[in-house]
Length: 347
Ligand code: GLY
Figure 1 (cartoon, protein in one colour):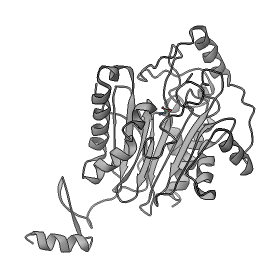
Figure 2 (figure 1 turned 30 degrees about the vertical axis):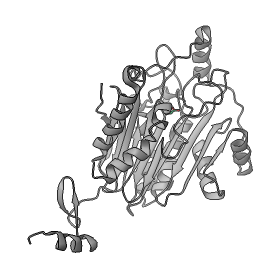
Figure 3 (figure 1 turned 90 degrees about the vertical axis):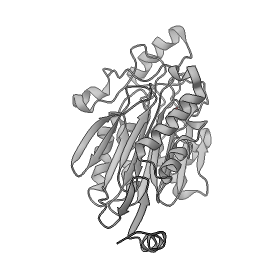
């Protein structure tokens, strides 16, 4: 059939065909890859396994992205959960966010002594009229919802790293390109599932776990949880709990999560910007690249001192990523298995 503007519109309205930058696509023959879950860094392999337990049984993307990142919150690593590096005053403060396929979202920031900030973020979404709770208020809310107040004691590895950091107390970001496994609780894991943990110099680093999933019903959700920048100023909050910056989900288009230097993700409303590029027809990787390149232009020569990375999943189950610097990877779990993908990068 010859496609002219008029019958193209008619076909589109019937949902039979659509036009993308790649060309004319027959939606009926298009294979949607679902269910699928993707997560940041090699810690994402274990997190994906948690999510897959939900997705493989026909569960929702929302349940999957909560359960998935809880796995990482339970592990000891530099940058997620109560075992992570503290702020410069020696307190671990946690940020997390979650978003579903209907623009429902919840987040917590500057939360202390609670083991699963992602689940508190979900409670904020489901049990309050608000999107975000912070600090003492977030902690009070968590306790009211039945979460235990933990001791606040640093993990052995975080304490060691903190004592080392205190010797110089330098407040200086280091690009997260050097993945080095530490001898901590990750040693219980098989080598290939060890999380990236800390730098040899123990300085500022980022390994936020971010996850986005598409379930068997074709719905998207996302989650993000982190202790933020190690040895940060007390009260510092990064991009991860900020909807539109660290995480964004638009069920008509795709879902995106960020990791890296939160300040620079916030200034470009990063995750939301990537979703908007996908809405314009860009592939997930190209959409991520455009936002990373924007950050690179904004930062000029200072781009050498930071890392930022995005992962994106579109409505068809196509995924992609892009990082400012080398060293970023992400894990992808489909019916065919769970694997790590090295991300393309800018410089
Ligand atoms: N991307 C995590 C943070 O900057 O806190």
